Length: 508
Image 1 (tube, rainbow, N blue to C red):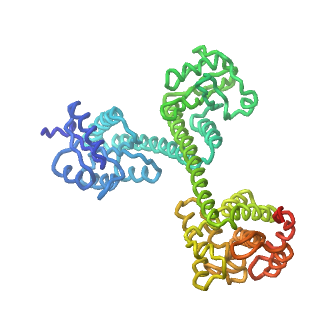
Image 2 (cartoon, one colour):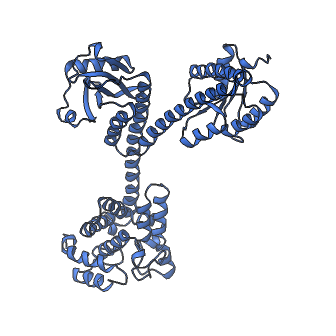
Image 3 (cartoon, rainbow, N blue to C red):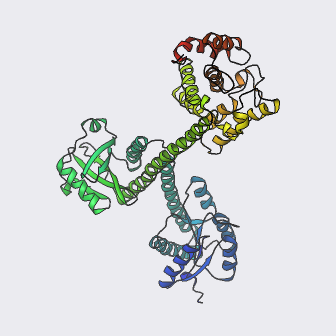
């Protein structure tokens, strides 16, 4: 094996496939390639072989890429290190600067990009070493400043990419994503206007969904010429960058620079984003979009496509979870004809009380969900106890008292609904602290659980049960009034009494 360090590289990554592909690619181009699956293996190679450049992943077992870079700086501070990562962040960028890393590639990294970076870094290393030896201190400082400026520029780029990823990671609806596409694009590429259109492929039509110009959304029609141009961009399957001299018909404004970038989901065009720089007669220097702007816009559309797909997938999963849980409740209530539809009625009464008490829409949604599932824990109680027609023994009642905790655990396993889980667990707590499972007291009991407690007791008394017939309205009202301040929150009872006639079963 030759020891010409200029053509000798080390690739460090814990993914064997990446090592194999990189090794084959660079060896075919005349490089001597060493590979290592972590920093510890890499150090052993560097100590025994003269390496010209080191590519390393950040996240690896035993010794990660940043620790490796620090060791390399101690061993040989002239050996350039290029970091590759799928999770760029400001913190990691700053750490790489401190550890002597000379380039920072964001995964997925193509091999041509790696080679271009290698050639550039190799040339820069040769100049760097030459200047360390031959040039005066001023020249060395200038070179270091240039490298530092370049790294700072890369850091700015990484900050922008990180910002884009963070913005789309917290989107909760498709329209929110559409709005972020246009406003984030306008900010990043310094456009005067950005539009997002959904593409109806079967009709070859485009429908405006978001714009930084509200007038566009109101008028929303696009000319046939512009629509044909958009169709051509979709057919070419790549971004398009033009100036006003290219003769694009259908653009109503006086535009200096115009960009169209398709959004694809699973290889199918979902929509397009357009960005415009408008003509400004009194401006000395006009901005024109560049390939870097195309790069940023393409990155935005890729992240937006992932967010749109994830939102749709999450919505389907969410709906399926609801359906599954409600099916559990239906199966549970089917075991006992006397309690059929009990959970639905409790949810309705709870929401009626919550509305009068000024609950927010989020609280109303939580009440509805928790009301539907408040007794789901009874699925873990034996039928001979749950359906017993007579009085329960103390031991049997202790088993019944487990159902709020069981229900809370069932919902908690899904990891989605912390508030609902708390309400389900505490809907049998008493205002005076004598309830179960935790003996909470007063306002320590979640407000929505206090509402659900009254609704649950009301429906239990106003409907037939295996061990008794439903009670008369006057008796139910009397019991609930009598338990105000002991079992029930007085404020909730007061509100409930104003709607009791409205929610009393119509078949009575």
